[in-house]
Amino acid sequence: MCGIMGYIGDRPAAPILLDGLARLEYRGYDSAGVAVAHNGTVAVRKAAGKLARLREMLEREPLPGTVGIGHTRWATHGQPTDTNAHPHTDESGRFVVIHNGIIENFLPLREELAARGHRLRSDTDTEVLAHLIEEEYRGDIVEATRRAVSRAAGAYALVVLCAHEPGRIVAVRMISPLVVGFGEGEMLLASDIPALLPHTRDVLVVEDGELVVLTRDAVRVETLEGRPVARQRLHVTWTAEQAERGGFPHFMLKEIYEQPRALQETLMGRLDGPDSVTLEGVHLDAAFARSLEKVWITACGTAYHAGLVGRYLFERVLRVATEADYAHELRYRDPLVEPGHLVVAISQSGETADTLAAARLCRSRGARVLAVTNVVGSTLSREADDVLYTRAGPEIAVASTKAYLTMLVGQVLLTLHLARLRGALAAEATRHLVEELTLLPRKVQEVLNHPAPVEALAREIACCEHVYFIGRGLDYAVAMEGSLKLKEISYIHSEAMPAGELKHGTLALVTPGTPVVVVLTQRHVYEKTISGLQEVKARGARVIAVAYEDDPEIEKHADRVLRVPRTHDFLSPVVSMVPLQLLAYWVARERGHDIDQPRNLAKSVTVE
Ligand code: F6R
Image (cartoon, rainbow, N blue to C red; front, top):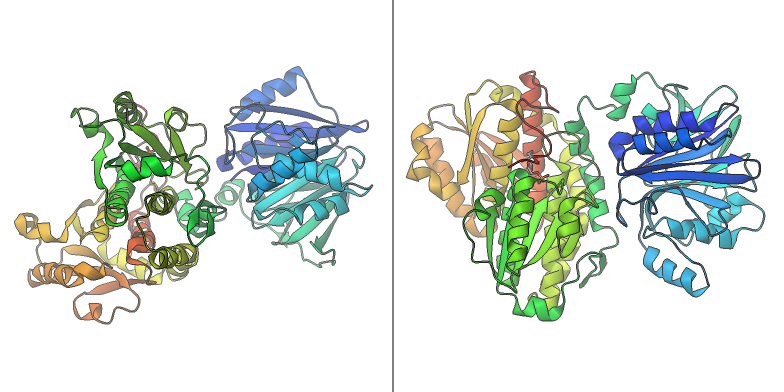
């Protein structure tokens, strides 16, 4: 995610762009920049860090002009540096672009451009677009943009300003959001409605595959092929705060609903074919993979729960002994980490103090550290030998949701990558897994399309004092995360354990009416889990099952069933976690809690 803003009118552009970017900072905040057209040129100011740095820069070196574009970045390609900040230009500085999303084929495009003599300055995927537009320019910026984007693949929103044609701003939407705002004698453009609200409530939502041309008093909408599109403007009644959450009452719910999109981003450009996975920051080679004898996964909280899934995948698929350990435990137990071992350190923020310390310890013992993180340029990403970015986009709610799902998919990609290097998975099995992987965004969307059973269940259990979560294998990993989600925002006491463990003690706490959530997707332990379920049922527990939609048996054993689409058993956590996220959310809402900022917690724990 990134935030995009554009203005064309009679007022000074820079302050309007800065104000819009401040409202879009929730979409990304690692660097920011603006470009303003004036006297036949376009001047750019940009800086890594928060918007305040750009603001200071503009105070020192103001940009006059009434047409401009601005960007607040959430890095996906290239570290958050001044050079990588947007806007980007061609070498002459006449063609200026900002962009949100990913240009999947930027590497071959970069090579092509370099071979034709272009000198690219940044590490971003964006910059290639400025150069492509420059190559395609024959006096009409709209046509040049159209031709350039026909060569780019991916999901993005792009905005273009040209020094030769300062009377118009051109933008293209290919999946990433873009909204046009109608002012009095001025037009605006933004990634999201909140940035427009101080100026107008009349908007037009640009659709996928559309190109828009903004002039001072009009907008022209057309398809990428150049056919005109007639579109009604909408009148928005949201407040700025509501709009920032995309109309959702809480960031957590918004982020849960963003998951299909986030998963698409995690996968984008990384599956070249059924048996080829490209992970841009991961440089493991076949020799390392083949001689690998031990993997350590380390993390805290939700990231640790994602790691439990990784442990299972690595062992089952790669046949490598794998331990998953809380970072705060690993760092103090003098672990038997050795050179040649792989340490997978997982952290959404990349700044969790314990995870950093554990990763440093392992690295000092000669292990190779691979970071799985969401934040480009985070401390973990800088200190690790290899980095796999999850690309979930900024996660604002304290309770992690989309970061977790993308960590799961990131680890599946890593498993496939290592499996290929080790020759550990047969071609047919790989193909099946890859096929199912690409279907996950749609399957998660299906779960999100039917929230009613979860909402009803939330009303039933909102007044309970204890809830237990059980499962076996990967279902146990999901039970752990389901339990954490519930307790951290609903403040209901909850515990998770392997389904086989219940009878060794905790069963004593199950009394008539106690909710027990059982996650039940793993074929090879299905019957065993059903036995555990019978044990709690015999004690009067209220059994809530999360099961595949085509499970014919489960209704006989459970009081309530939350159905999810069937997928490969290795991928089931990605779909089975979603109803549990919704359950936690709706229970907390029923109890009237501050969902996005639960008591006593912080988003990033940067102290021991
Ligand atoms: C729970 C949650 C926390 C984090 C944990 C690690 O919803 O968000 O448990 O998962 O603090 O944070 P990161 O992933 O940033 O290292």
